[in-house]
Length: 425
Image (cartoon, rainbow, N blue to C red):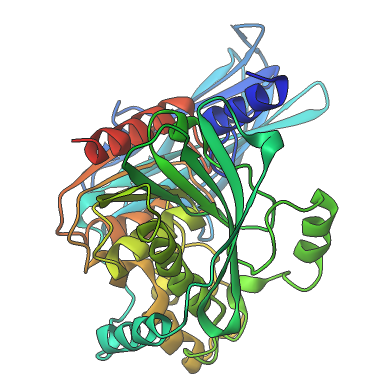
């Protein structure tokens, strides 16, 4: 294997989504509720233990400031303290309704601040969504899929010899999408003659190039990793930086006032179009199709599996776009936090009902594996549980309690391994 392809394999294994493993710091602020599962009954009181370490030992006489309150909401307690022996127990109070209570601590050591959080869950399996299901939700998306079906796929593939391996051919793909858009991605196909299961990899938020999932292709899967913005995914990185800070800045709210013109309509339907392409490949086994992704990609995994009956399994990490109206009910809503600060438009709220992951989760009929952590500040666990609790299809949840908006190798290995195993049954 070439050095270039070795690097690609490493990136796929360790950084399969847009988010990497958290970075270690010299000074470690440890915060944890006293329940080992970080989970409480409503009305039950929680205490948070805080310890500050340097070189593996508690730091004496360290000054901290801390806040406690429902996640993403104004804190109900804000205090400071000096940790004489490097540790303190904070009375966090309780919650009388299902949700998450967060303790955020900042320790000052040698003039530098170090922050850490811990989040206690109160009856998370009882969290219910706030988003409304439009009466014509199914009709709206069935109409969109019918319109898409009339558009030829018009796929064009370009071999990327520098990315190919001994076992896999790698292509840049360009196909016709919904609404006069083009859809781009990186296709990886095993070289050995045969029929293979397929995996669609859907992207996290942002604008970037993609390398393709060569690793899973070498395990005997056709893989397609797509972008969502209608631009090629193999350009110079500077192109994406310019797009992200220019024409595509703030894209999750583009045309939010109109459900037919909202940015994610094309995105959601183009995920179905990606499956159209995969289903038409001569190497596809015709039966076993899965979808996976994290954050925005976690949302798109649920959406795609709900919209497209060809999907048999999904793996979703910390899904975004869940229960975005939570802020209107006094609790955390999902990324991109559309209704947190700005004035709320009735038209935008109405549009949200057609795109919220909760309403797609309700229609899931295929098994899924999910993962997230209680400390996610980008996709609040309140919002993700609102979607997860709405799923009636077979489901499993792998919790890494301390995890924020990042992916650990254990999550990648478990969910990716599960998906590959199901598709090869």
